Amino acid sequence: MIVAQEFLKTMDIFKATVLYLTVVTFAIVDGQSYRAGVVLYKPNPSIYATPDEQLKDNLNLTVQIMNANKNESDIFILPEYALTNIKAEFESARVLKSFSVNIGKVGDMLCTTNGTVSEQNLAILACAAKNNYYIVANLIEEDNNTYFSTDIVIDPNGVLNSKCRKYHIVNGTNFERGPSANPCTFTATFQNQSVVFALLYGTDLVYGIPDASKSDNVIVTAATKNNLPLNISVSLSQGFAISNGVNLIVADYNDVELNYGGSGVFYSNGTSVIAFNAANVPNGNAIGGILIKEIPIKPMSSSSIINVKSTIFGEIPKMNLEYINLPTTFNQTIVEGKHCIDKRCCNFKAELSADSIAPYQWIILQNKTNILTQEADIFFCGLVVSSASSPKLTFKNLTISVDDKQPDVAQTLPIALNQNFLPTNFQFNKVARTITFDKENNIVVLFGIMEILGSPNIGTNTAFIVIIVLLVLALVALLVAFLVWRKRQAKNRRNF
Ligand SMILES: *[C@@H]1O[C@H](CO)[C@@H](O)[C@H](O)[C@H]1NC(C)=O
Ligand SMILES: *[C@@H]1O[C@H](CO)[C@@H](O)[C@H](O)[C@H]1NC(C)=O
Ligand SMILES: *[C@@H]1O[C@H](CO)[C@@H](O)[C@H](O)[C@H]1NC(C)=O
Ligand SMILES: *[C@@H]1O[C@H](CO)[C@@H](O)[C@H](O)[C@H]1NC(C)=O
Ligand SMILES: *[C@@H]1O[C@H](CO)[C@@H](O)[C@H](O)[C@H]1NC(C)=O
Image 1 (cartoon, rainbow, N blue to C red):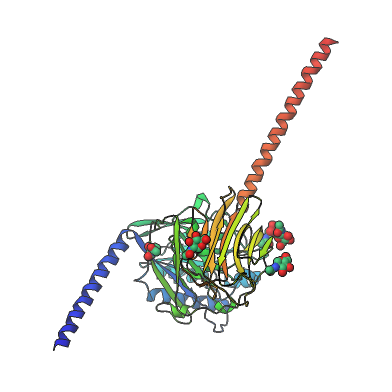
Image 2: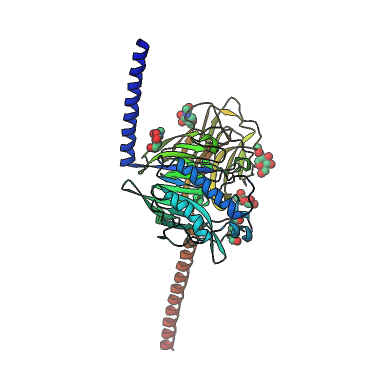
């Protein structure tokens, strides 16, 4: 009897809590936040007769996954290439053609009942979006026998809200470059609240967000093949969100066996939620699942000190990462020191129960390096394990700082990975430009600060302006010389 009463009391508390949480959640959703669903979709491995059948099946399966979560999310984001079963950037034009669609123009109603094969394919997505949610999806777009990696945004009317062709493509692909290096932006309306999103491809992370595309909320569709030490999608995303003070939503191509992936939501305050395996996220299975997070429209303002903390959903991915040697000008195993390259200086200190950090080493470099398939000029101060398989060390404390910010620094990305090549907790001081542990005894394989120096486009413009200024100066000098010469001539003639 008493037990039953206790049980009822517990039930009441439970009900009250559920009611309270529901009210609070609605208040938040109604007020200043939205819910984003990152789709972890692993293309179905079944054998299909034709690319069109594969495309249709992938479209239908993603729609099933989104619909199963349609009341929980306002916008769903699909990874780059997820609908095609191919790593499209390395494919021939013939293969690209077989998976391609014609997209039409912004403002087109895409939820139609008949039309060309392309229109019917797009209608599968658009009719799912209609009355339900926004979709951001990546497709292989065909336009006059030219192929683009194109992100589309479909709104809850089933209408094409935006269309955005990738600009920072990999060298040597059969894709054509999009028209602008500036990422697209689009506006979505959630419960009468407008949110402006910048829409980036993974490769755009290297270039930062130019002023023309500035936004507090950034969506990234990516297909990142991770490799050590500097090309790890989740680590770069985390650094990017902190450095730019944005909410970053990343949908990355999902294939851990081939070292692809790193989807998640990265908040500006250093908190992030990451998933590699579709089966591990709520409602997920081997083919797909959705990671849904609530996101404040205005990123959480944080002090100059950011405590970075990430949560990994489910099973730890087992990647077999390739290790790429960096062209370093400094590699040593001392526990404390300082090293400068021109005006840039790194200060580093490790506390551990040994008097050397071997087999790790400090890497300090300023050079052109390949980041996310893009050639970037970087300055890097960090501690790096010397190969993917070397023994791991436990540090009591590790602190690295970079002296004064030079004017050409486009982004300052704190990056850190644990022994599973996943983000680990650390503290970053944006003002002191220092990265350190927030607690003792951490195992890291990568720890440091990477600065990306002036983006190539800005570089070209600056060089152009410098050349023009020099030309004008040279012309002025010639004119002055000419005038002086003429005056002398006139004087000489008079004297004659
Ligand atoms: C960071 O912001 C997110 C989103 O608002 C929030 O859920 C999280 O608790 C915040 N983290 C910290 C450490 O305040
Ligand atoms: C440092 O680099 C040089 C070559 O640049 C290499 O011979 C040496 O083994 C490296 N030292 C360490 C500790 O890795
Ligand atoms: C920069 O990298 C290139 C190519 O890896 C290398 O040959 C060169 O020595 C490096 N320069 C410096 C200053 O480290
Ligand atoms: C891609 O090609 C351009 C022009 O040929 C070249 O300047 C650039 O360095 C190349 N990028 C990479 C990452 O190889
Ligand atoms: C780690 O070392 C730095 C630099 O020596 C120091 O400022 C910091 O307080 C230390 N942190 C901890 C947790 O001991």
